[in-house]
Image (cartoon, rainbow, N blue to C red; front, side):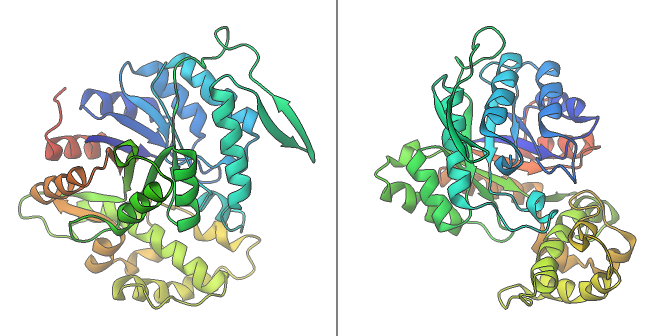
Length: 359
């Protein structure tokens, strides 16, 4: 099994990629959330020209923001910079679309986009709809300005049954978020394997990736709510609070019964913060300030040790290695850990705990 990192793009994206490569990680993935993080393609390009080996990709790409030809051109251009090192993992959008007050992209539109992108990246013709008209298009100059000869690895972030079925139908890679909690085979992987089998595909052909909301690796004697762990895990745990507070209050769905007690308490405690945003032109966007990056002062009191444990993955080094062994035995191909965009320390701690290569 291989290990990667995911990070919000910023001016240090290339430096994070180089450090990850030096420490033995196999990939670096950048977020695609235009109102929250730096541009995914700009950061991927900077990483591509700064590294030699590490795979470079998205975690995850949101097709809704671009025309299929623009997506394909971007990745074929990146493929010219880093031949055969590209990972295009796409999803229907969570943070990116919620920033606009939208729910995830319709699956039919997502499937149409990804089908066209796959064809274009192979150098084939594709059907693309623009302004109500369907056109047959292709990338005209592969080998001159673009690279369509080396394959771009494509995966779909698929949490629900319909998008898992689409992933299996297309025969591409699959990705999901690893839930915090005990070891064993995650239910989502079991469900994806069933969808893959239902599509008549061989089990060994499924390429599964998990993204981890990494909350840090506990050092000897360190407590779950130490200042260091709170600095690493707080924003990850709070991002889940943002999601469910949006669902409960801004979308009017109420606090779901299945939330654990720590998350439920934090979501209920978030209501006064949302009430303070009344009159905002876009309360969803205000809610996401600091999303996965930092904890705002007015949120800090909601973070408890129990919330850190339920909203992010925190292990001892031994526990981390044991959890990874479980996933490897279950057939997972890669696990990608979120890190802070300004921190080589997170990369080094993970590499040490996973016993990856030295500088």
